[in-house]
Length: 225
Image (cartoon, rainbow, N blue to C red; front, side, top):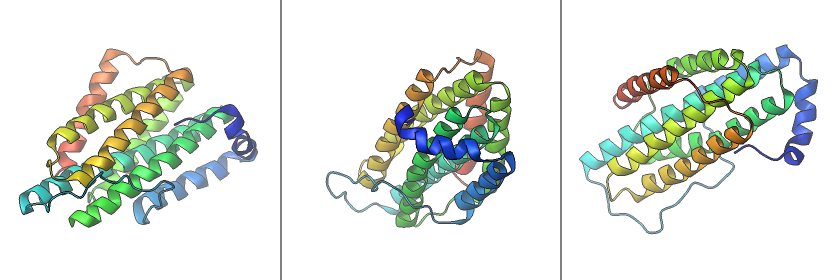
């Protein structure tokens, strides 16, 4: 979630001193970390209130596929925030995007750990998903800060609905995955509300529809690949 002005002031000063080339190198570093390293979460992984029953093989495979889709979503979130932070000329907004990306790293770490626990793998197309999302983030940022924030709001609202659907589809006995997804859903709602307070401008309906169609293609492919 976006932080208060007082909380971001030290980071804001550092951000203002960075040159564009520094920020570009930072974006490259963020991409490499998202795609090639094991992320470290700042917050503990959400835990179920009680141990779940052992998963049947079919349930384990389905849970693994759904968590792979969620992991892809977090890879894309890293790319979007990194691109928007790189492209904005507003140091305060840049810092907000950077801090939001840091918080999304928790989700990336949680979903990666859960994939390991389920014996599932990340999407083989993660580099493609990252590159596409980064490009989209740059286009959104070039439209202006209000439009960029509006894109963020719409993205987070769609992710929130997507996670809500996963709570319906995850096996009832997979309490560990359900705890992670529920916390992610709450966090995404907070990001959307914070972006609205920061001055987001609602996107035109055709753009929202196109975003939903693109997300449907991505999630369908990532379920299997």
